Length: 159
Image (cartoon, rainbow, N blue to C red; front, side, top):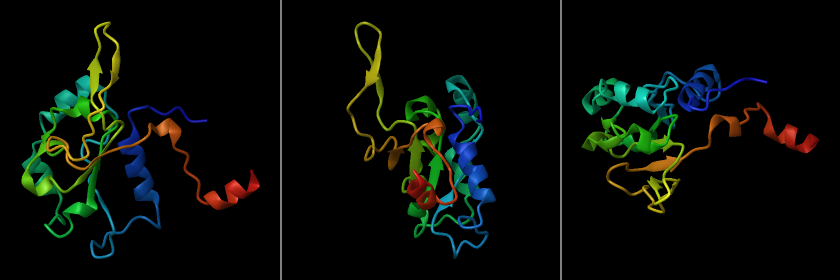
């Protein structure tokens, strides 16, 4: 068994893609998707606030050397927190500059948290997939819910 930091989705994804022979290419013409590993190390909410303040949207745009209007929708970002924890990432994850708006955003929740009168957190039913603050935002599971196997069909047949 492996102890996995619950905020490590981005770094796990990066490692898996770099190790993959099926999902990794250095030729942009062969790529079906482009993962943009912006700040992939696991972070809690406070660390996200500090880190995001150093990474403006223009810097992210400049680092995506293959980004253009034709393939922007093939790019994606992933954060190992709820989107509400990375609100300070203006220009690229939140309130993206125009060139980064078509990029897909992955986070642990695509719903906002609200606090009720008793102070308990609950999900707000507001769907943000078409929200201009977080366009193209999709929910992903925590890493502990993901199991990587080379051949899923063989594993399922043996169960």
